[in-house]
Image 1 (tube, rainbow over the protein chains, first blue to last red):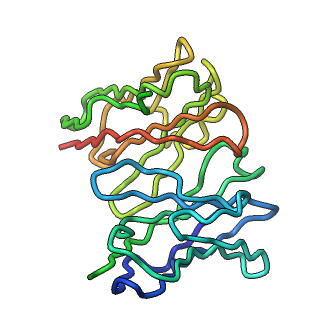
Image 2 (tube, rainbow over the protein chains, first blue to last red):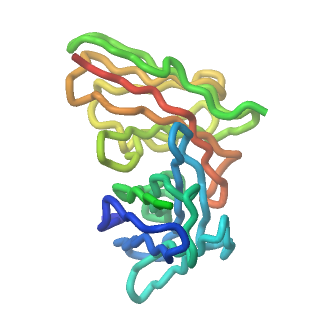
Length: 111
Length: 115
């Protein structure tokens, strides 16, 4: 079965500190991995996906197939990064269409 | 242009009642998705439409849940004989078309409360 695990419900850091939001997945095959973000009073939106290999708002994520992980990282956190972050996957096993989400991690960046 | 819109934003109903939740996708998006998000959980897939047809309804929890998209644009999620466990935020998303490379754009959600 496809599963996404985000072990931390809350991650609290100070401004300027490095951030790593953990995501592990269970999937047989080659999944597509995504990070979605939801800022306060805003809708869920795509932050980045592993196939793009982009850095968005200073965030990066590397797919590690050996460890089945897709951790989200940022070297210097900003207060505006405070939000709810969801890791998600799709793939042939999900019909490519539906996203399977983790339970989310709330990032709180304090001044 | 406008993003995905959902109405109502909030719906309070009594156990056993029937409810309809509406989703207006982004114009031109042929794919439409419904997800349900319970408190403290991530969104959970319910159903996916490609055009007018439900291409995958494997996430619908039981036969009390039904969704339609008769003209390939607006979609309605229908819940019969609501139960307290149906209380959640129902999210709609749309994308340009087929395939995982198409980004899903989410609506603001409808918060359903069943008393």
